Amino acid sequence: MAHVITRPCCNDASCVSVCPVNCIHPTPDEPEFFTAEMLFIDPETCIDCGACIDECPVEAIIPDDQLEERDEPYLQINADYYNDHDVEGGLVPPKKSPQLPDKPLHVAIVGAGPAAFYAAEELVRKQQVSVDMFDRLPTPYGLVRAGVAPDHAATKGVEAGFAAVAAKKNFSYFLNVEVGKHITQDELAERYHAVIYAVGAPTDKRLGVEGEDLPNSLPATEFVAWYNGHPDYVNLSVDLSAERAVVVGNGNVALDVARILVSDPDELAGTDIADHALAALRDSKITEVVVLARRGVAQAAYTNSEFLALGDVDGVDVVIDPDELVLDPATESAYDDGTLDSTITTKIRLAREFAERPATPGNRRIVFRFLASPVAITGGNGVETLTCVRNTYADATGPSAAVTPTGETFDIDAGLVLRAIGYRGVPVTDLPFDEGHGVVPNAAGRVQAAADGDVISGLYVAGWIKRGATGGIGRNRLCGQETAESVIADFVAGTLPEPTISREGVADLVADRGAHRIDLAGWKRIDQAERTAGKTGGRRRVKLVDITALEAAAQSEPA
Image (cartoon, rainbow, N blue to C red; front, top):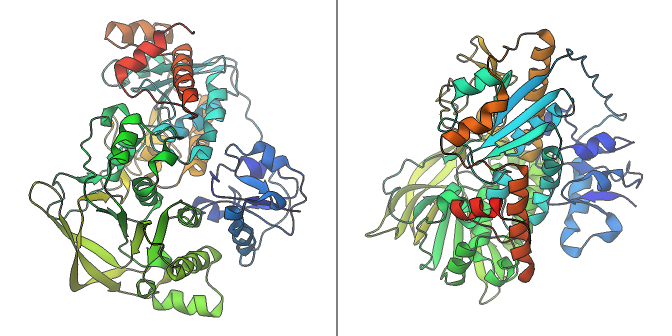
């Protein structure tokens, strides 16, 4: 019997370190780890010890004899990886911890998402390091709370690890405290040896087409935040009265929003979707979502696991015209002779299988369109039509094949257009910013005055603001750890600036400026209130989405 990694895989690689036979790849030390859709277990090497199952934070690893029918394709997906990847046995030796100076190290982390927590996790292992985590929202966990789709509850299992970090005695929350408003960067620098910004990439990329700002032409980033109950987007105007929506882009976020739009609201009612979004979806008239991809199926940005999972949504057909599945010459040649990378081979195979499935009368539909780009959005008081141009391959370079417009256009009637073409970082007050890449320039997390410029002592970044909006939870783990290691290395080297003011007065400082700080006890009260409210309806939690209500819950006495 072997174990199999399935859809919820978060790529955080905690399973890799506990495997005694090195049967899980790619490992963080292998180049492909940074672009891998998920991790894979070699069925020929696995010894069924169960260590990885115990370690996995999202319950993605299952013995092959316990797979549900919907997960059986992962047997082949895991095995296929090892058809074209040579791996070496033996575990990577653990890193030797540096000897720290015999004095305290105080670190402030701005942001409370995955990268922030992975940096904190590395730091609080050392008892002499104190970490204070700041976030402007009353709740932690960033995109794990406000970005992961509500019907992907298993993925949110990483929160248990974050909670364990927050429970450490040398960790403190400063939630509901906005850096730049309640405390400045200079004031943090005066009170902490190091300040790590892990503020993510909060805005969306734009299409740059006429009509993009019409009502009901929205960024998927805002739509996701709306249905996940982010306080900033509770009142987002979303009109679901048309029968068709179009999602521009074909990454996992595009698949998430398409799936949510056509899922049975009764199924969503068992999740932690925001109540206002659930009510709107119950009244929705949308029966078809078109997912529009600029390039071909071989270049699709979604992961195979998320694409495969669409076939399991009750009452929904995945519709693909076989004529849309055109491959560029290089990919087609490699596919035919069996030399194509297994991940892309699987992507093509799954799409062709979906294309062969018969439609079910009365089902809602997710329709994939490839090699097409939007050129204009038109309508009177809102979106009515999306005009697209057909693309063709401009070269034959396989996975990175470029496309060019043909001049042939077509219209799609739709009442809602969501652009899901990527997140982008925004400038952070008092920090350098690279506009071209949407990041703070840095070297291994150390903030630089400019790209390739001098390092600014005591300032660091982690996560998407550090490297751009690429990679998920697993990549953020390595990213956060790298930044934490840079902080520790600079502490050992004696290059960190010494605080000139005690950090003990930070709570009073932010309170004087109007912050209603929420600490660990306050967050636990919010968490308990949401979970208690969820029990009545058999839900994971019922999210509080109003700042005032969240603040009140944080102060309430337990029942």
